Amino acid sequence: MALNTINFAAGTIGGNPLLTPAPIQATLSTNYVGSYDFLSHELPDLYEKEFERFGNRSVSSFLRMVGAEMPSTSDMIKWSEQGRLHIFGTASKTATNQITLDSNQSFYTPTTGTTATTRYPSVRVGQTLILKDTAGVTIKVIVTVVSSDFTVLTVQAYSAANISALSATAGAISLFVYGSEFKKGTAGMSGSVEAESQILDTTPIIIKDKYEVNGSDMAQIGWIEVTTENGATGYLWYLKSEHETRLRFEDYLETSMIEGEPAVSGSAALTAGYKGTKGLFYEINNRGNVGTGSIADRVDLENIIKVLDKEGAIQENVLFVNRTLSFDIDKTLASLNVNGVTGAASYGLFDNDTDMALNLGFKGFNLGYDFYKADWKYLNDATTGGLVNTTNGVLVPAGTLTVYDQVLGKNAKRPFLHTRYRKSETEDRKYKSWIVGSAGGATNTDVDSMAVHFLSERALVVLGANNFMIFKP
Image (cartoon, rainbow, N blue to C red; front, side, top):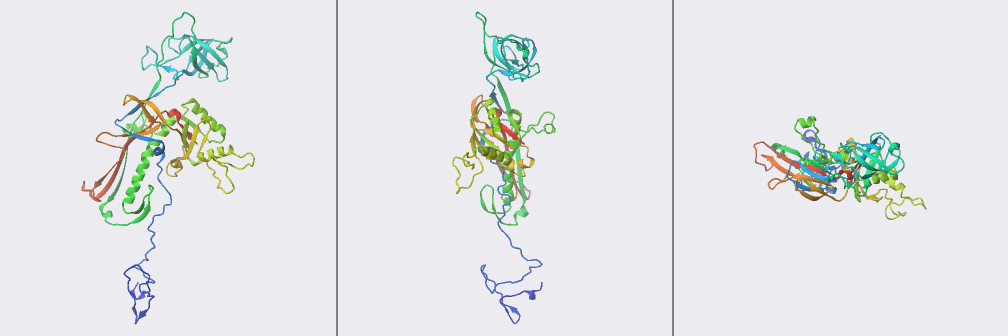
């Protein structure tokens, strides 16, 4: 556009413009430009502040709330957990007054005189059992003979009937030892039962990330005002991307511990040299309790209580759930919390009057055990757990557990859920970050760039997984 097409609001004298720039940003009649095409395009309006259309994008917080972190010096983390105290299992009727114990049952424990690699049942002559089959037939018996391979028991019923009424289907008979009885002047109990324990282990994995920018781009400064997920506000330049890489890496530190899976024998990952790690979901699916479907009524809550009764019976538990399961629990509790006189909902410790906003959500409830409910962003986020939607939530016991630490060689109190990271006197791999390059202050290579590296080596330890529960759609 030619210069003579510029419009001057202040007027002209003899065709010459009256245009005087102001020394400050002031709207005066002498410095107003009504229409000005700089080269070929109008200058756009610029919003300096970045709009946060997704809110807080970080999904980390779960392990920070429920877990602890502690150092480890080994490639392998091992611990032992107590087995059941009482002897129980399943069996089938094979002949008159004979039952055969099913293999791989919890009552198969080492006894005196056996090797550690061979496991034998702990049921011995003189012990008294309760037998019950799937039809509900219950008989109390005493063991009179145990076969040489410790699998077949000859029993005598205390009632007039023998065990012929019991089912012969494998696994149909449930049994447990409730005591013993011996005749006068007889020898003592034969054999002894060793304490049952389970040796468990997990392996740490190395997690890495990197952000890189070349030196030329670092010389072109462009500022933008932002608010970050960690609460900081202000202006950032090229380090904004570095900051987001750091936030993403911190999320990976948690999601790797949640979703991690060990590479099994014969897998392509193991063949390629990757070992994997045992994450939270993997451990609960394999050693814990699994529930499917929704929580639609009190019966569903009672079924959870029954599972806890059979396991460790930890009094306080936390439910980390997605919105679907959270709404299910809220609706179930609401149906149990209706004022019988007025029919109005009454949530919480105090009745809602007409001037109060009705709170339709619950933070916790008690039904034999104390439960605290928290929404888990990871399971709701459309780019992480909410995308695949394979888990609705987990139940995590609160408190600590005493275990035998195989490395320390002694008993130690540990949180049910905690992270172990590699650390020695000279190397701390909990959270490492360093800069490589020849730009941005780095002077350790001849590459015209700045690279920010992140690294951590860690594993998740799930103690007493039988006290945990995972909820699936």
